[in-house]
Length: 68
Image (cartoon, rainbow, N blue to C red):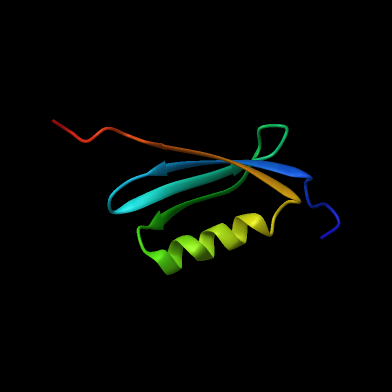
């Protein structure tokens, strides 16, 4: 892939039933964004897709607090 970016930044909003993953490039453009079910094979597949998009991937993981 000739136009493969050198670096992407990925934010993961972790939840119980699903996670939301979004990858952006150096300009802030969304390159990949998806709701991912909380299932090991689904998560591994999503991670593989993201890792294939760039030479280097920087990760950030967060979660919302549980409702009271």
